[in-house]
Image (cartoon, rainbow, N blue to C red; front, side):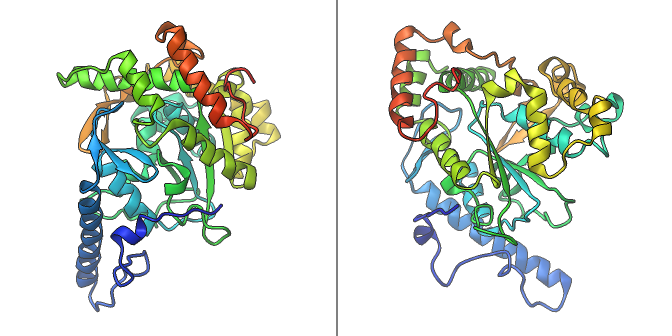
Length: 371
């Protein structure tokens, strides 16, 4: 899994490269070391912020200003800077699992399923009253690198987290932290990617964006404008098709490192996909667990009907960049093919034509529904 990022030459000079090792100053006292660490981090963060702020920006299919990166438009200064800082500083363990998705592609659901599967022994899914999901949303249990962890205030201390550590990102494959995509241990880790039919992804994203804009008294994005933005790639985290193909290629090259899942298949067989997640994470279900209904318990726990009834969903909020979002906003029923209730046949045909052209020759079904 190789990647190139020419932006590094734009914001890091050979004498100013920061890494996790270079952030360990030789100060004799712990207080001085902590102060030096903080200063180094803030300098790196500010340098990236200054660079991103100088790039072209515009409105698009987002509730934030989009900034033009060489890989496409990116969602706001803070997430892009967080992505760049994570690229420099994140030290992966082989046991780590990173969950990349485009927004509204099943992100909340895959986070819940993975967390519940990996932590099922200390937090049994059928022990409803004691499960962390009663007090924490999936985005708090599996945090985004760019939104939650690598922020302006301080560098995260991730060393104390127990294995396997779970992280999320919306970054395209080429912008994953270099430690994630390193060729072999001790660097590198596992990746679980979920893609969703582009038309359903667009509709779900539009509803999320407009719900945010409505809460804040801002002008909504019309459906025809949203289709135009989406087809032109002026949407969060780069064009849909390039995002999917980046992870598809990585999966084809290293299937033991990159698991590629389709939302539509997950909806058809959630129990089968829970088993796949467990196998991929290195914690397969035992015969006693299977006999005891552990898989079905996880499916029920993470189901839409159950999650929307939890207090963490009904009343909780999640910090995203400089704002907080009600946890309830992350939950839609997510029916396959719901796009037909929102897009005209002409809009759908436009998206389908791009999908067929972009995916041709890659062994990836043009329609992510008709498999």
